[in-house]
Length: 579
Image (cartoon, rainbow, N blue to C red; front, side, top):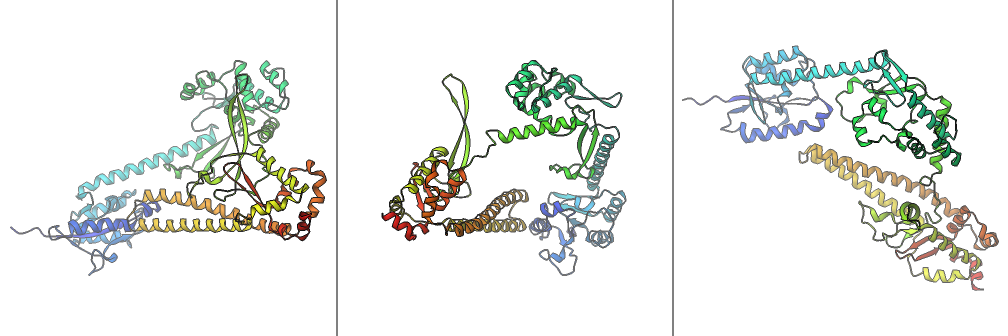
């Protein structure tokens, strides 16, 4: 019995898109198929011999492979390796084709091109071999049917999306047909109409936020406006509506919002619901919808609005433009004056340092709930200083985890400076105590932090290079590499922002050093000694910056004021301290 004649094998690689260039690169496909050839196919018992593209080449040589990069097979190109390989199959020079996936051979949305491919492969019944096994020429029809179905699905989605855009522009309604609060879509007349009860609530809310009372308002609104003459907050408006007996159950039923109704069975108004009423211009007659472009149908990533179609739909105007702008202005003023958004001035900001790790302490604020004497829970706001390194992940965290009350610490440190100006002889004792500790200037400390940030950026760049190298060598999964690269890029961006901030602080500190070097302690004492009790916050901070360059704070709450070096060398100040 004669042994089976070895089949001649051609090696084909192809990528057709940028996504495949990253997920299924040519090198990754080649490495996977090369292992399969050496292990199973091109062995004495494998039954195949290699037909290289260039004579005399082996499987280890890139010239032996038929490669197309990139080529999407939507056009018939006789200059491609794909056409060269198919012609060799038709002439009987190649009996089988080894590919990473069968769609690399026949995946095309053009019916004429698919017919040509099948014809050339079917002349000598060429086999297609993948890492999953052998595929006869008849088995390729499943792949062809899949490509036809995928192409039809894309065409259907494209037509549906174009229909949504055309309907929104011609009929004047969003694709989903969903109505919003105060306005309803009449499907029979193809027009928008105003819902009187809901429109009245929108007008009451806008007037109440602006501080305008009217006779048509419920009693709860008028009573709240008597107490808050500058207007109501969103929370106060929602409470006034709920107390007056209004709810959202009819609105939920009209718009068929079953899930929302299940979460809010009583239909109570919330502050967020009131706030959303005035975020856009729909209540002054401009209802704007954003519809995805047909070419992006199927893309799951969230796209910015600039990549979508902006369609303006005319609806009945419930509010005038002046009413809407006034409500927004009053809301903005109220938010800026709220306790949460009020900017608090920290007297020791930039001077206070953690004695444990040397980092500059930052000012924070927080809330806590306590029960007062009447048994009611009340929210209290607290401002404090804390070490920024106590919760860091990228560096070794600081062990000083205590927070220090801002007002108490500011008052204590300022009292020391207050006595120092009134009693200059106290400088000697401060100098003797600070000589025991290492003194680092703020400028030098900023430069050290800048070097550290540069080192961190360089480290992230090295990590990115190593991840790319591992992906190219096939030692790391592309999806895992993408997640790791995103994390590293995020950390690099954070350190880059920190580096930019440090550069600005260094320039500002240089100018400040020049200004502070010309300050005389005696003139400073004469200028402020008589009105120390009436100094403004800016003047207090200026004095602190002129006299001290660092204030170290222990976790226990004890602090050390380190005076500026120029004070030690000031002969006039030294004579004054010796008196």
